[in-house]
Amino acid sequence: MSHVAIMLTVWGVITAAFLALLAYNATVTRYEEDQLFLNDNNSHEHQLQDDIQKSVTRTRPYVRAFGGASALLGAVIVGMYTYDAWLRLQ
Image (tube, rainbow, N blue to C red):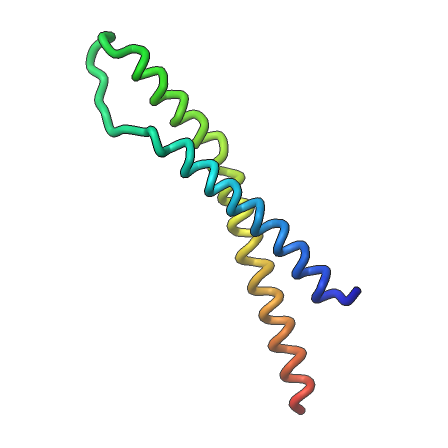
């Protein structure tokens, strides 16, 4: 297996994990509402909104890491392909 095929496989796995995290966050935040809780009358709804915020906050570093890794690997793969094409043209 060539190094480009290995890098494409790794990029595919990282991108799939990134997309799965984005889908998870989208599913979790579907029920998020912009509310301001001034008293304890709606404590159950307040707790649900806090749980949603905690879940999104917990996955945020992973989303950033996988997104950055996917973009970086994509740029490296395109750069390697361009460099290889440049060498073949000369």
